[in-house]
Image 1 (tube, one colour):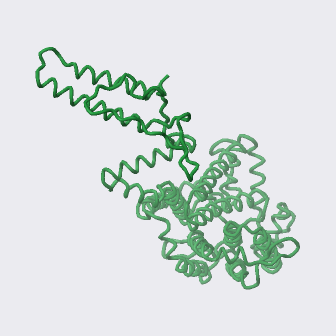
Image 2 (cartoon, one colour):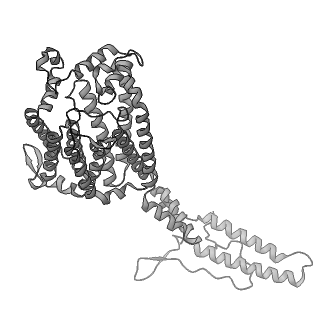
Image 3 (tube, rainbow, N blue to C red):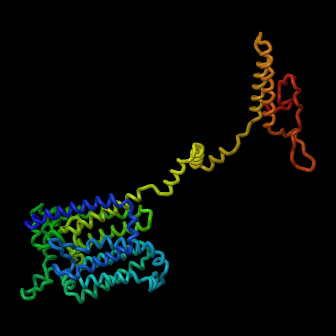
Amino acid sequence: QSKAVQTAPTQLMWSAVGIMLFLAIVVLLRDHRLLQRYTYTAMALGLVLLVMPIGFPAVNGAKIWVTIGPFSLQPGEFTKIIVTVFFAGYLMVKRDALALASRKVMGLYFPRGRDMGPILVAWLLSLLILVAERDLGTSLLFFGVFVVMLYIATERTSWLLFGLGLSATGAAIVGSIEPHVKSRVHAWLDPLYYYDLKPGQVTGTDSDQLAQALFGYGDGGLLGTGLNQGYPGEVGFAANSDFILTSVGEELGLAGMMAIFMVYALLIERGLRTALAARDPFGKLLAAGLSVVMALQVFIVAGGVTGLIPLTGMTMPFLAQGGSSVITNWALVAILIVISHTARRPAPSVVAGEVSATQNSRGGRRRAASRFEEQQLDPADQEELAEPTPVQGSDLGELSRTAERQAGDDAAGEPGSGPGGSASADASRADADAATQQVRAAEPPSPPDALTVPGSGTPSTPPRPATPPGAPPSADPMGPRGHSQ
């Protein structure tokens, strides 16, 4: 406990650095697609970071640290994001070839030999890391992320099965020849074997950490012993790093552990939703890959300290002590937020169309608005509006009589109107005659009076006698056979 108190200021400092990096990425990286330009640069940088710890001495049985003066870094943590960027850029370009070019074997489509090159290189590289650096966690995470992203990009179950087969084969080979990995597997199969060893039989790779972790879970029970009431020091030096979840399980119980797992699940779920919302393939693969990194890291650590899988030596995101881990996780969340922000922006084509429409003339804007209104109508409504409304004969007769009455009133004029009144009456009469002719022209032909033009089957309406100029209009302008009823 005293050691944990002493390291608290250092952890707060690294947390502050991680938050500042988070803010810098959110502000400066306006578009995640800029990372696609550095696909192969990320591959080269990732390889350099992966092999860098080989030249440094092992710490606690694994070569995963790079010591520079008073500081020590874990390059494998930064490689998680860098290699994921490379995977996303590579699979975006090659996914069609990896998905379509395949052979059917026993009902499953397997890739061709030349298409298996990337996954074989990733498999061999993960084995190299496992053997040379004795870093079981990073090798599992590295290969697992690649296989899952390959499955997401191609939607081929054969790739997933092929990757799982390679993982099992590699684990069996390395577990049989590497003493450090062999002791981890032995402790996983029999956590209490350490207490059966005699003092002279204990080696540097033997440990009772997993047994003490299981004892701590049993002591914590459902609700835990309470904060600062447990004994995390029994686990050893890794109580605040690799086995931090054991300390939480002992002091907060099963309920506290489930609450923490729910927070991780919420973070991973939002990352996968971001992948679904992204409009570009690179953003989808990158968001999915970063979410898988977080999910696999939580699973590997939690599975190791609970006895589900062998111990791997990884850290719990945002929970375990370690500057490299804290900085990497803050950067991971920042990239997910940038992708989510880009996905929530309006589509570029829609924005361009709206801007061009608003920059047109006033008449152009009205036409655009009219087209928009037409799009909102149902097809049946558009046809109904497009058809002309028929005018009934009674309506024509009523319009004609109204025009004649108005003309008669104007012709009569007022008493004492003089010559001005006569001129006004003539103008009104001319307007009435013009209105009558328009009404007659719009009148449909009368079936009884229809004649047939010789040489054609088209009926023709007989001409009507024109009204002599200056003659008073008849009482019924439609004639004796008018259609007004």
